[in-house]
Structures are given as structure tokens and as C-alpha cells.
Length: 282
Image 1 (cartoon, rainbow, N blue to C red):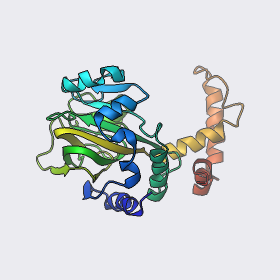
Image 2 (cartoon, rainbow, N blue to C red):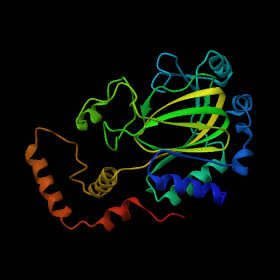
Image 3 (cartoon, one colour):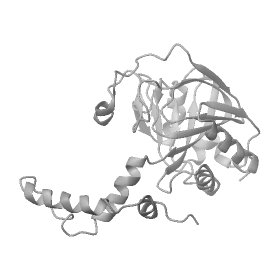
């Protein structure tokens, strides 16, 4: 991977705020055949495509279509999402692993590449994501409007503005979520070669100026909560008693198991948890 591009990923991430750098397209990425144009992408794409319906202009309201239908939907003003673009590309698969390691993210991080094709004048509705996102503009121009999220800190799931939060998010919300973008926002104009960092939880919406194609490097990294529960499950799975079918009426058995885990947890160290969740990277 180009050291300059990798350096941009690290610098943007370490800034901790939404930020952008203008650079040249990495030669290896520029040579990926299906990134040359939307027509080539549709022609070579081996999977189904997601079309964002016009009611919300968001992936929560989308339809799965074939590549044979993709041009029609795009011409009707609907954005297209090509999921898991790293799967047909060894280059992108390798880049995901390199970037994750260099950023210091957990080995349990779910990394993937997404390609967004956006028609002129269209984009996505305001929302925030639970993941860490880097956007590399490939073709065309796209305007991003962004703002820090003062409604909820470190959300565990995605949310589209105006819709009901999921039940888990509702459990830790301290106030209702915003129904309009904050008054103070930042605007970023992405052109070919622009690399934008979208921190986890940031509000953002987009609009294309001319047809646009963007490649996203997305990392859904585990929280401390996820690391603890993953290690805890691995530990408890070794016990035949914990693997028994749960019978909620048998509270005495459950209390017995809880007493055992209390005793066990007192001896746990951070190194015990990380050794279970962070195998040595090859």
C-alpha cells in the first residue's frame, strides 16, 4: 500500500474530528478495473446491488436489485450501493487489513469496502453510523455536510434522522435525538482523490454535483463492552453448566452460576481478556 496514502489514513484518524485531505488516487486503486466508471462497475459487478429508494434516500429504505436493473434505477435518481467491494478485489482486501492494523483497531473489527454511486443532485439523508468511515472519492464531486453528535455519545448502532431509534439505543439515550441537522455544520467538497474521515457517530448528509462514485473503507470496531462479552462468552462456553438449556423458572441454578462467575472474575486481568480477543496479527 502507498505509504503516503496510509499516512493520510493515520493522520485523519488521529485528528479525532471530521477532516479531509486532497491527494492523488493510489495507483493500485486507480487500476482496479471496476472503479473506472459506473458502466464498467455495473458490467463487472458479480453480486446484487442495493438501490436507495426516493422516500428516505437512505439504505434503511432500499431495494435489492440485479446489475441488469442498476442503470434504470440510477437514471431514475436513486443512489446505488455496491456492498463488500473488497470481495472481488485482492487489493482492497489487503488494504483493509493494513489500515486496520496501522490504526490500532481490534482484531475483532469488521472491515469492508463499499462503493456508492450517486446521481447528480442526489445523496443520502442525515444520519450517523456506529462505524469508522473513510471516503475516497473516485469520480465526480460530492458535498458532505457534517456535525458532531451531541445527542448520544459512542452509539452502538446506526440511526437515520427522523426515524425511531432501535430499542437498545433507546435504553441509553439521555434526550431525544435531533430531527434536523445542527445549526453549525462543516461542509467538505470531495473531488477525485479526496479522502474524508467520518468519525463514528458524526451526523452527516451528502449531495452529488454531477454523477459521483466513491469508495468507502468502513471499520465496525468492537467497544470495550464487546471485547469483555466476547471473552466472557468464550470462557463460559467451556463450562457444561453454562451450556445447559436455560429454564427461567430454575432461579436457584442461575444464582449458583452467578456466584461461580463472581469468584472467577475477581482473578481476571486485562491481559486475559485481550489474549482471548486479540490474536497476533500475521
